[in-house]
Image (cartoon, rainbow, N blue to C red; front, side, top):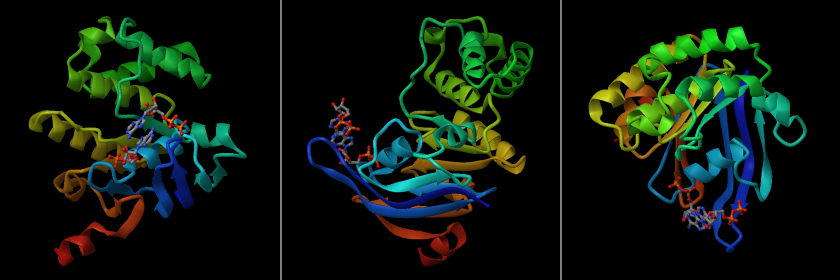
Length: 226
Ligand code: ADP
Ligand code: ADP
């Protein structure tokens, strides 16, 4: 099964800048996949389109066979997204942010509470459940974003620079967590500009530069070339 299929995706921003020049990518179910590239390469634009935060200019995207144009709600059910910017309400309590999100997916309240407890414990946020989000450190806010993205048990989790600005110790514990949920069956795609991060975590990798895919290979083969 193909978890994510991107075909000839092109993005021209309103100012005329062509951020994606017709890229194609396939990510298979179960993979741990990295989209690697320097700043400005087009990584966030790609993930922005997949998570319907950015409008595409041309091309198509499907998630587990559901085209994002024709079957958006089915595609969204399969998809959890952790964008780079914190986009929760800073004045809401941690637990409420998670439970509210579960409501959007029609998850019954008692089930939502159980899942919220599970992920908040896993991510070391359970003690903070009654704090307002703005009281959390940057690393905790990042983990809150991850917990929220997982609440509907998506088959595909996409993270944009999940460990940017996170210290090395916390970065390692986030890596372990991501490996654990990948081992349990969740397909993971992340963007990063740290080769080290891609190297420790990912089986397959695509390298993007100036809006074009310049490499699409397994991590092993890439390392053999270096
Ligand atoms: P879209 O084509 O998806 O509607 P827009 O071109 O309207 O996107 O821009 C969306 C937002 O991104 C705007 O708020 C804009 O200020 C911001 N933006 C503009 N240029 C850049 C840039 N070079 N890098 C990052 N963000 C930018
Ligand atoms: P990355 O995530 O790899 O750093 P982005 O996808 O954020 O790259 O940006 C790709 C290119 O598109 C960059 O040159 C950036 O300045 C430009 N860009 C991003 N958002 C906008 C926008 N809203 N309007 C115009 N240009 C943008």
